[in-house]
Image 1: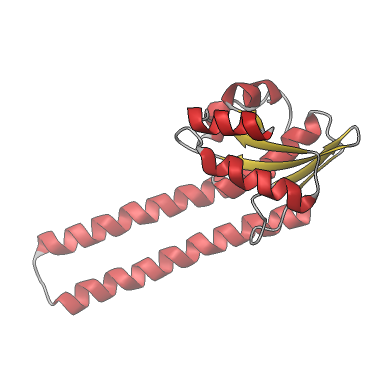
Image 2: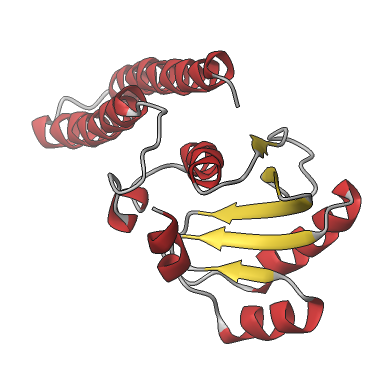
Length: 191
């Protein structure tokens, strides 16, 4: 993915969060005015909830702006990836693969990706990769999706890449279908 496309993704995320802040502010004002309540506790709760959402959006904007977009081996840890959003994880996956000898690694179109987030190639072998930045073990669905996507994109190898582990069912199905699973430990080695 070239820098201009990456920058557009980052800008789009920032604009989305700013829009969410403004929309939630309008909603907060509407709720306070339409309720007709003059209870200070009610108003404090509504404003408090809005402030939590506001801080969350500011944090996400900070993460998007602080992402440099240039991966260097040995700089990141897996725990830092746990806090990324899914799109940033997919973009970083391309950079990680390139730093690890893949000649090509590019994101697929976000909508209608047929279960594949990254298309990559190394030494004449093509890879269809499903990226899952999760907080829990990845289940069977990711294996099914990338297996189907591999056939659609006519790639040699189907891979699920995650910052976590895989469920037993996911491992069993991947073994049966020949889908490669790159878990947290594999990702740590790539970093």
